[in-house]
Structure formats: structure tokens, C-alpha cells
Image (tube, rainbow, N blue to C red; front, top):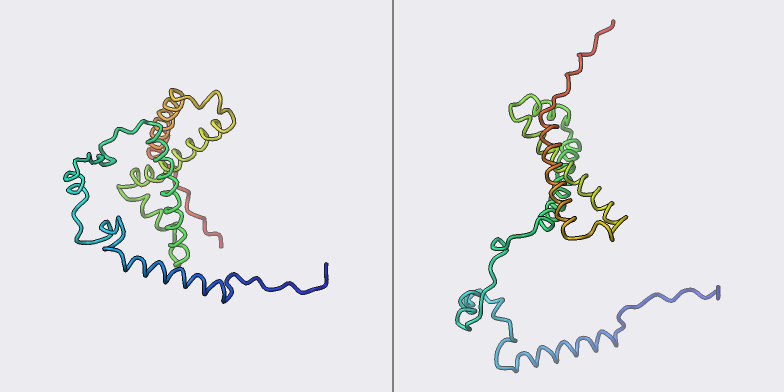
Length: 188
């Protein structure tokens, strides 16, 4: 310790600020003096010619939309892993929001459980949970044994196992109904 107080960190002194402003002024002056907007500015214009028409006029092919591609099962499995994680987060936020707003989460769950949509609601909760869990277990195996598990054919096979296992387990959980708890006895 030198005993001296630490000098405050100054990110931009007046000199730095002045140089930055001079550079910005020179850049804008250069842009104004040129013969029009910089290259690529037409992409930002609302009156620009549509992309497909511009590419047709230039004789260039247009890439097909993502829906035109056939994704491999490993890619679909990866996307589903992320989607189920987001669905679980949104569901948890919804339950927490109801609880924080003073709602009775148990009563909402009991109402849904008593409705005809109960199996569908159970599946909607069970599938993201089981898929995300099985996908996470698969990733742990991949992390522990990458040289023996990360081959294209094994990745595709494990993707199908995660999908199939999640569907079977989720359907089973949706079909199961737990017995109703007996009402509490009133002891005087």
C-alpha cells in the first residue's frame, strides 16, 4: 500500500471526447459529400426493391427458406431441447406469477385436473419435463465419454431414443391419475 488515494478512473477526458467528435464530424462530412447513401443503405429503405426481385434482376439464386430444408434428427432434437427448456421456464414463471398475484395455484391445478382437458394438460407438463431431463442426461453422457458416444449414427440413435422415451413416459404420466386424498377429519 502506497498510502496514496486511488485516482478516479476517467474513461474519456475532454481531449479524448474532442478527438472522437472531430472524427465523427469528418466521417459525416465525407458521407454527405459522396454521391448518395453508402453501399447497402438500400436494404434499410422502405421503398427499396424486394430482395427476391433484386436477386432475380442480377441473375443470382435465392436461398430457400428454412422450411425447405430437411433437418437431421440430431438438429431437431437440439432445437426441441431448447424449446422444452424455454417452455419449462415460461411455465414456472406463470405459476410464480399466479402465486405472487395472490392466486391459489392449488385451486387452479385442481380445476384443471377436474376438467376433461386434464390428460392433455398433464401431457403438456410431462413432455417438456421428461424430454428436457432425458436430453440433459444424454448430454452428461456425451460430456463424460465424447470419443465413444459422439458419432453421427449414435447421435441420431440417441435422438430417436430421447424422442420416443419422452413420448412414452409423458403419455404414461398423462394417463395416470393419483388417488384423491381423503378429506381432513374434523376433530373437535
